[in-house]
Image (tube, rainbow, N blue to C red):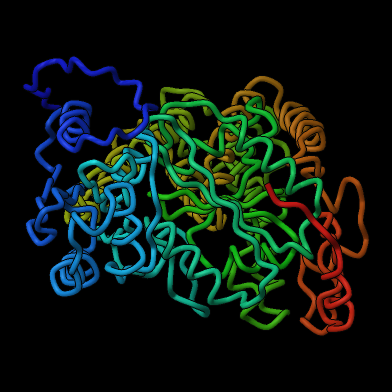
Length: 519
């Protein structure tokens, strides 16, 4: 990172001072506060004749078309003012009302407001002998196009995903929910980054208490910068003393829209394509957007496969360690003889063997994420085939352990949400240690402790294990399995939705009479 060569400013950095009538003083203050940055553009407006004026903006953050057509063109073609006819204190009003054709224009009186809007990609107009400035909305930096989501791909369903622009992300949700009761509250978090954060919810569906709790937790965040939604997630989650995610994240607009229709609250952060959804329950992490686009029987089968993969990814190495170390009598004789022959030349016990293989796989997995994509496939082939086969031939590990680790790795990719997949990877090592110490009894103890822990968790006041604990029978129709859409007449009660009806138009309209306050 390069350091600025500018001299220390003599102007205080407390930028909450008013805008003064002298243009040169304001310009000097702005330049010194920003440190004479190379991307600061100060354009003198000679078209205003006897009125000294400048346009100020940050290069690369403004829409050049708006700058030239809506601002410069209108000032050059329409300006007929005269300093003798219009008093200095009324000149800005004259430009605002009679000259500019831009729609998003606002007066500014404080330097703090000026710097916030300037850094946000707006254009600032300053006049001499005028103690106010004009903020002209012209945000237009380069952004990534709307593309298919990378982390949550589907075979059938929409293929558009969020990008790093907050406005674009809000538009993608508006396209799917064309209802005036879709409320969006924005705020700036981070006293240096001033990151725009939007809270999105359906006013007649979301529970008032949950909406207020989300609003309260966001307002309590006190940090210098927010660079990703992961910052927000750690601030608003109920507890940090768990490996299980209690805030759901998604880069799919259809997933966010479906969650809003269930009464949940979405949080969008400018600069990241991942939206947060709360409350987030355990069952939500096994649900994919594709479940609701396929037939119910296919979706039910896929969900059973995901739950099975969850237990395989968590317990497969532990079962192998327990059986090969403590419970050999549980295996058929032929299989036991085969395993014994494979392990005859292995110098390590089953736990060390599994630990080495799992750590090797985690290293390869992390390497596959960090290395360039052009060589990623080659590293995967080397890791899975060459190293695995060489380890078996060298007698470091058994062939059965390679099979177990491979099945475990594949099963971990079946889980739709990456946060839960990471939690399973952490728990897997704990289960391996318990299995190596106590056998199946250790695995049982670990499962009981995990169940107790899961039932103690909550997400914004909602039990994490709903609808299983507490048991809500009517919510089971969209948990382990999914019934066809005609039977999903009500929203899940676990989300504490304010209006449970989803297939009765009269009930939906009736719910709109609920009055909710906005901050």
